[in-house]
Image (cartoon, rainbow, N blue to C red; front, side, top):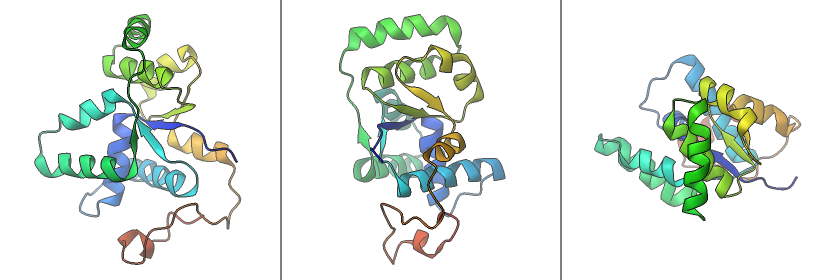
Length: 175
């Protein structure tokens, strides 16, 4: 299967990290979203972040949480630079009337500019109001994206946690 250019919105980035950070107690629905993101990451795609997502995590006030986001991004993700700022700004202005989440509008505009194939998000308003307006980018919830991959059970992941990684002792991510 050809690797797709898959981006995360800010919520999904945080949910992924929350699942990997054993110190965080999560509600069941968020736990499942985060686990699905980890599974997608291990079995298929590397994740990309738009400049707006990076700007949002850099605004985190709690130093420990900020460092978690920054260190994970440095090692595991790729930040996509804005290629054409004027095109992003024009697209942002086109999307604004349809959704009050201005950050969401900017993230989608940047994802389009960067040529993402898929943008994963968990915000039903983001998806509901902007999915039909997205140009060249499929807005998807993590569970829908995982299902679309149609990975047969028993398939080996593309990436495996090392033996000393706490994730290696877990079974929930294995398919």
